[in-house]
Length: 337
Image 1 (tube, rainbow, N blue to C red):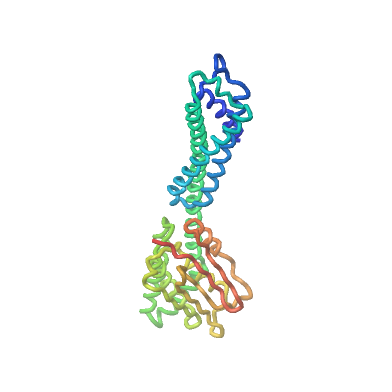
Image 2: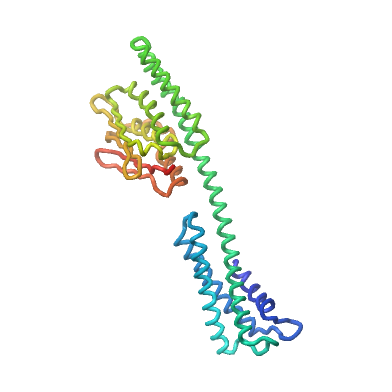
């Protein structure tokens, strides 16, 4: 649509601005002259459009915009001048150019004006398509931010709903009630860790990513609640090097993965559930032995899809999920701080 509208208009402007053709006085603009300008303009336009597409494909990242524009400009300049002069020569042989009707224009002036017109055409192409491109990128960026905000809010709301879920409260209050008479000290620790989990959910409500160190700290509080409840039936191993603790992950991802492991697998003395958390190849890995329940509890709405969606807006690396006969593993990217 842009080409259909602007190509004829640009081809009409060029003879007036750069060569002095007129409708009302000599030198008169003829259909033959307009056709020659239209042919050259179309070839230059299409070629430069292809160069734009090629450079965007070769340098898609936003941080490579300067490099893309530099390469793009050089290639377009060479293509424009070369194609303009070659096409001009061919059309001149075919008799479609009427240089002899330019009063006071020698051959050198005509060539200079012709290349200036070609460069004007290229600049027009760049201005139009780059404006459209950056407007679309801006719109895309705004939409991604809104999507990320919605996903983050949904994750936080769902996590909060899970924590105040009657079954969750019932199980933790049951555990607490059994601790109070038998071990008051541990009961106090239990309440403090429970409070820490709630406080974390409220504190990260505006965060898109948080330090792995902070997430692990709260995850340990969550694991404390689970360990107190399940005892030796649940084994949790964490092995994260200190240098990885300053990387970032999406909030609540560890808690979600821990929760899913317990929700979907049997946890008993006959079949203890073992969960391992470790760093590997720039990723955080959460793995558990596979012992699926026959009947799954009702889904809370928090799961791998939520983590995938939030990561897709923060990193080019994807969340990886693997399952074999004995284990279920989720690998999430560690984001550079």
